[in-house]
Image 1 (cartoon, rainbow, N blue to C red):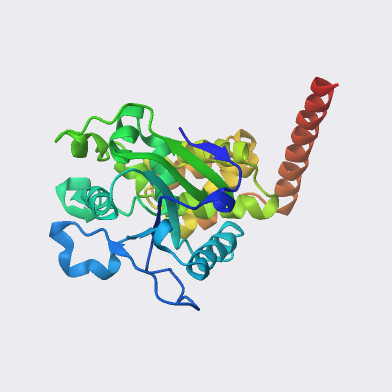
Image 2 (cartoon, rainbow, N blue to C red):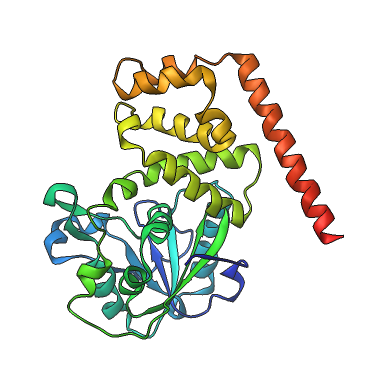
Length: 300
């Protein structure tokens, strides 16, 4: 499972950086030597594939450039360019082959897809949905996968001994049931970013809200008529206010009409006026205050 860890950047001297070259800024130093992770079926799209950089082969200036990018990335001020720091005994070329083998395969309905699991936002959703066997198969020879997500550092550690098998790919590939949730990774992260604007999310809050939002987005019948912007707002309000919002008396007829496609999301949302949202905010603040007080008593 994902575990929050202290900022790893101060002791990164070995291993490999996994980078999304589409988001990597031009270095103000010499160019970095990178090895692309390219599946055979996508050799014509190499420029879209993630790349590996061997930390030990980087100059001080190159390493500082990457770590600075990571710093801005963690603060939410830069796109996800540095996807992970990997601890692995394989050579960079061998590791590139392993990363590449998980990038392409059958998606919903059997169509071949490019699965950007290396993106921290997708990877975090994947780790929340995968079984331990799937996580270990996806990591394969990688002992630890450390990355920045939701403005915190996280680590995934392989729990089983490495046992290379031709079935690893099938085990590490999402199931038909998992794909619908994975396809909402961008929406999920938009919601988490919005929740983090209200109050900086601690690691436990990140994981808690991640699970809450995934559950709300899993109602495919209710959300079938919502576009990405609507889904983001729906998920945000549900996560912010919880059952008090989802079960609000004024919204009950709206949910049913939304399921039938008889009302738009905007029409449902405006069934509540400013005074209703003020009441929801007040109730939310009272609950937070009670929880905070309980924690204070606990530590006394």
